[in-house]
Amino acid sequence: MPISLAVLENVIREAGSIAMTHFKDLKNLEVTKKSPRDLVTDADVAVEAFLQESLAKHYPQFGFWGEESGQSANQSSRWIVDPIDGTHSFSRGQYFWGISVALEIDQELIFGAVYAPALDDYYAAEKGKGAWKNGHPITVSNESNLADAMVATGFACLRSYLKENNLQRFCRIAEITTGQRRFGSAAIDLCLVADGQVDAFWEQELNLYDVAAGALIAAEAGATVTDFQGNKGLFPKQILVTNGKILNQLLPLM
Ligand code: 2AM
Ligand code: CA
Ligand code: CA
Ligand code: CA
Image 1 (cartoon, rainbow, N blue to C red):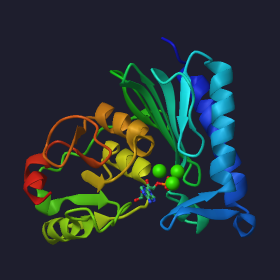
Image 2 (image 1 turned 180 degrees about the vertical axis):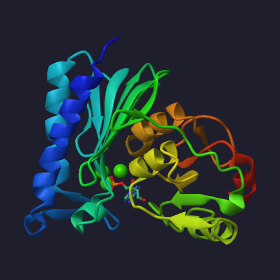
Image 3 (image 1 turned 120 degrees about the horizontal axis):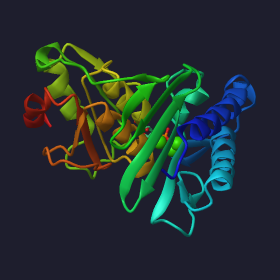
Image 4 (image 1 turned 90 degrees about the horizontal axis):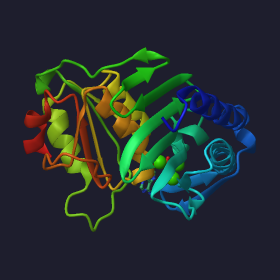
């Protein structure tokens, strides 16, 4: 066992307290635009720098890939980090944003954690061992009727070159389902599927650092992770994560 869940929880919670220091002082937050719809703040940079240094201190054998600082030399075994998933929500004082940390070895995800500091919810999973929220095991919902389902999505990308952006898909699915949510953090959306709070989540044009930890947490809680055609596997550009029971009803609407 190359990692300690307790050590990682301490490191990630400490990263959370750095984020919370900024969150409690938003009027002094430095916000810049990486692209018209993608923000970065001094909190994102500080959290990522802390995680990179702290993870390297505890686990020098692994490389690092973070959204804001890029990739280190060793990428065959690496931490995949999104320091703040949901930066836009964070910058507006809303609560649904999370720190996402995954460990990938030889292209297999073996650990994932998503910590939502403003909610103080810590989700974690280890490959083959299950998923937990605040130390308690979690499982996906039992909902098997799409008409009664609560679903979540996001609109990371509305680029016109996409054959179909997510608005049309959302309309089709919203017409049939009972509840629809848009929390603004893919990492947390995936944890909500894992915890049975929503029955499915999909989004397009995401990156691996948005979904690596949350997808493992969802899978370990019993979720199916596919693309929009139902192919099993993690596809950040077309991710569909369900409780498994409504997958076949959703696929024709994707
Ligand atoms: P971020 O907050 O780390 O940028 C919300 O729909 C999700 O999309 C979040 O996971 C958010 O991550 C991500 N996101 C925001 N802007 C994006 C962009 N321009 N391209 C891709 N993903 C984006
Ligand atoms: Ca971003
Ligand atoms: Ca992100
Ligand atoms: Ca981010």
